[in-house]
Length: 311
Image (cartoon, rainbow, N blue to C red; front, top):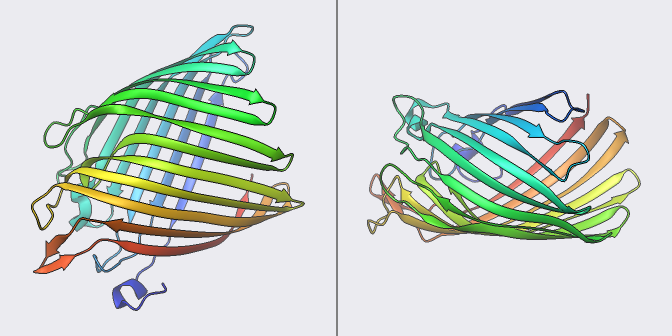
């Protein structure tokens, strides 16, 4: 850890993850697909905490797609389950479970233009006796379109509405949506620009809403692949667990980040990759711990070197 703080330098741990996929009857009109994903997320100690805040996150995604042959319509039913658990007993107040059921019909208006709708209902809440997470029942409805304007230019757009329905504390109902524009400038290169407005459940508040502006580009040169992804988040938390020094339970963050990477394909199934990630978070939120006023703003650099293998 590149820090002058002893708590940070003494931190670390073994992080790992695993993903499994399964599909039943993939070529039939009715298919069942399942995705299981587990991650042990190691977050190093910083000036706010003297210990690591490690988490175990398990997600299950089940889908029942219906795609009849020679028909313009289709869609799928889905169920998502996420269990988010902190390993330290002093941090288990934030343990939570998120469940979502929904339906996603689609319609091919033109050969390369697809319309879709999405209706989902969430059932979220705390997990375990130590959790203080407020229960919520978010309902979301949205409409969207994906089209190919030219052989090189793609557009994706969605608009909808969400009702967050928390059992206590801050609530919201608001417009959500986004738009993305992609351009393939060569056979081996592509850029994509996206704007999103979304509302998500939070571990340190009831929820947060944010505007996201993101760009992504990649270029392949032989066995080398270069990529870059700058992004900006303008985020507002509602119903924070800890009140600020002024007594407010709202928090506004500005997050600037960039991810840059290069990978080398050793062969079809094996790749070596180097990624650099920089995040700068500034916030107007201040809180007090043991008589000390804490400013949770930070700048973080992370470098990842590793292998990817397709088995």
